[in-house]
Length: 146
Image (cartoon, rainbow, N blue to C red; front, side, top):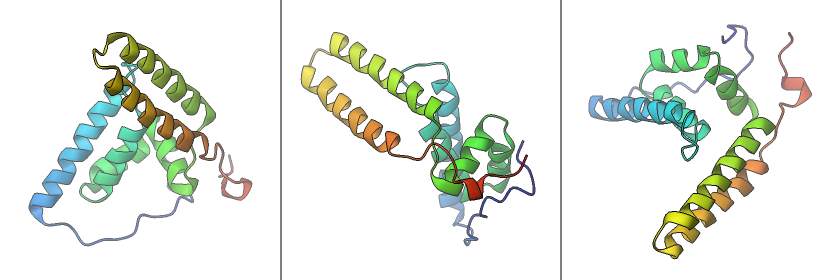
């Protein structure tokens, strides 16, 4: 659970979006959340990017959903670490690498047009390069006591 004394920086206050935009953002937040949860069970679907997207959309449309995400036992710490320093833990990096590697093999074996598989693999490789460049821990000064 998120600790109320958590030193994570508060999200900047923004004006509430117009009703249609708010509903689109809520839809994006919920869809991303569902895809993130499905990604826990399907190796070809990532979890972390969808949870981050869900939190981003919820921060702009649904304080209640954002509070739930931040208080969630699995998603809350990930969101807090991301917000405080763009941290992605090593375990998540390895899981993403293994998942994308497995997906690449499946695509190479099943896609009838090899160029489509190679294009997708190139995108995954770029994502992995970016991901492995993210810090794995918060700087010592940012680590909450406890």
